[in-house]
Image 1 (cartoon, rainbow over the protein chains, first blue to last red):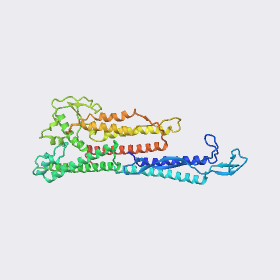
Image 2: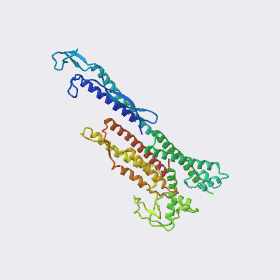
Image 3: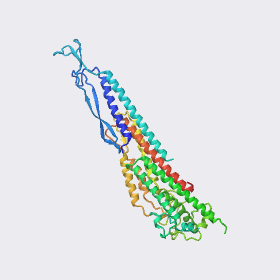
Image 4: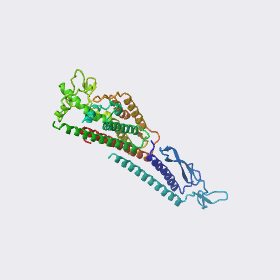
Length: 140
Length: 101
Length: 212
């Protein structure tokens, strides 16, 4: 039987996935190559949540799940560094280096929000456990 | 006195079915006797409901724990009330027996 | 159910009167004997008390687990719990404890490389419990007082034991939150079973003491 605890747990798992993505973004703020070794500035990852219809309690409360982890597609930041080993050799941006367009402030605020959501879910779980304990007091 | 001896002789041991409808002389059942027998039936039904609810809770049924606990507590209390009534009846019977003729 | 137990406590008195009449080797100390005999004297002993030829009771005077037989019927004292939900709750408590141990092992092994989480399947346990309960219900004959015949608790007893050999290894390695939630839910179920069981025991005590 799906209960409130399972719903809160799904929230915890989703927020943790989001936090993982954000920590990956912050760690890769200055990464210029991708996994294959090509010169490609890092693009931020972000998670998309959706309600999980499989996780539904008897009275209609639904849980959450991570639908997908998407990659952003924004223009990188260009800085003029003609002596950098990874400058663009030809084209209109010759002499520029493409840096990832990851805004540290935005990412960190998102991380704070994810942390607060995580803690709030845990708070809800505490309340659920408390309700369970109080219910036992019916049997005086 | 007549009614009390009636009660003692005609309260059958609890069988599987309801008691109040299985009394021997159906025509005139004294009101108190009917009251007692129906009370026993009701207590029995509540006990069975509580047992059924507990079974459903622990075999994965779709039942709320608070409802189950409430049903168990209600059955307990009604049973204790009936037991107290029975104690008073027995006490009354003993007092009557102690009357020196 | 408990009402039956109350009636059976009264039925027990009748039984002891019968036994004393037949000089059995099973003396049961009883307070207020004269009053009891006065209640029995002058009345026909009820039909269930007539066992025909008395069979010697094969106990050492203690009520032990091998249920002594008197003719075809069993003495009711070890089986007086069968009318309540206590056998069911015993099984539930046993299984929640076993499951708690398994889940605690999962938490302890959180950082062990290539560790697969294990669990005791609650769905499977509940299915087996349901089947054992249905078997018990269909095998129950109509109960007459003083006569508790119940073979079915053995089926219930085996449910928790049979679950201990089923650990399923879930291929998908679920994370910490899931394990903690399972432990929490398991604990709530355990506490509830224990609370209901203790209230049932208190009720039986009230019946035996004749004091609500």
